[in-house]
Length: 163
Image (cartoon, rainbow, N blue to C red):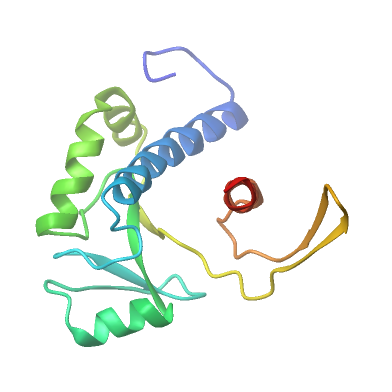
């Protein structure tokens, strides 16, 4: 599609979402690698838990660190598109490095006039209930906020069980 192939409206929307998700996941993976996915970076933007409201911080202070630990705010990652970066300094450098590694996706999203947005790098799951109904059968019950994926939560649960 980014190379000029014609696609239908539904397919176009799916491709754009997939490209944005891929870039977001690469940024999250880099922050996991650096062990900063749940930590404050200089220049980060944070989102309030169960909200879409964000705020920027040039320098993490004791209040931000406390609120991150309490999980009432979360660091964010970019959903790539046209618009302002909404981060600076260390957070901007990390995101720019990841985006620069995928120029066709990044430029394609901008060319398609997709607006840049931000999403939390982590999600609270306060109502997660689990039980082994049989020796090898785990039953989970939970809800997730919009924009979160059950498959991601399941992957994390499986990785914990494998340890």
